[in-house]
Length: 157
Ligand SMILES: [Zn+2]
Image (cartoon, rainbow, N blue to C red):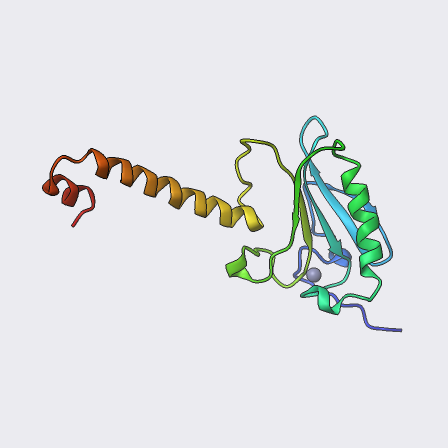
């Protein structure tokens, strides 16, 4: 019998039962889908997670893709046929990963004009959008500046 990979402090390890605020949508032998829904039952986002503690997909059992497909299909059943969505994982803090040490995929429905969720890839997009908006405001103020002195004051030079 192989030893179960578990980190007692990990919020994603199946054996710890620490996930809260959502529900298990489906499970396979080695993975599960955990979903968070709004008051109307619409999908806010889902996590597809190995039950055991795996830092990355490289250590998953060879058949994990089959199980992932079953769970991804279950998550898709909560969305309309044409619902755009992101499905992604982040490897490392700089890449937007915030739950460290336990590989997982996040599936998140998207709509036009929907603000980023501040998690994973969307965390990075939010920071990019904030910087871009700030630069656009500065550029607008600079174009309105009539003199070099006003421009220096705007840019705090
Ligand atoms: Zn874990």
